[in-house]
Length: 135
Image 1 (cartoon, rainbow, N blue to C red):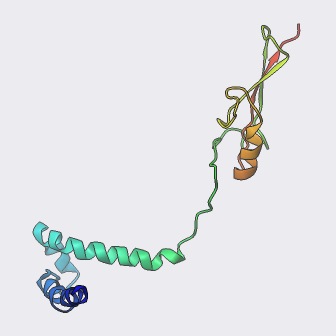
Image 2 (image 1 turned 90 degrees about the vertical axis):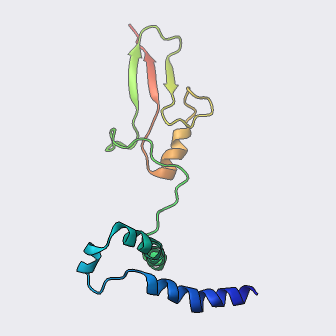
Image 3 (image 1 turned 90 degrees about the horizontal axis):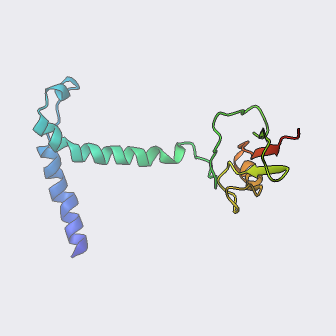
């Protein structure tokens, strides 16, 4: 029963549908189509576009799969790692490192998670280091 239905669609209904489509004889004929004629062509054009895409898809360049993506897109890209140091007089400890990669398990304090992130992605993000200014 299912095969008979599919057979009827392919042998009878599809040719009848294609015969009723307003396909112009020339390229310039497409410019003269009305809106309703374009709407009738839309399903066929969509299917043709999908088939075209599926045909060329194996030949399209593949994207590299990276677990993480870059965080730092433009700041100090010439440096292997971006690190800023700021001297602060009223700091309790000598150095405090703050996370800028958003991957630290002790966020906002840096736990050096940026090292793995940089290795995986080629990024160069590093911590913000606050230093106690010694007078």
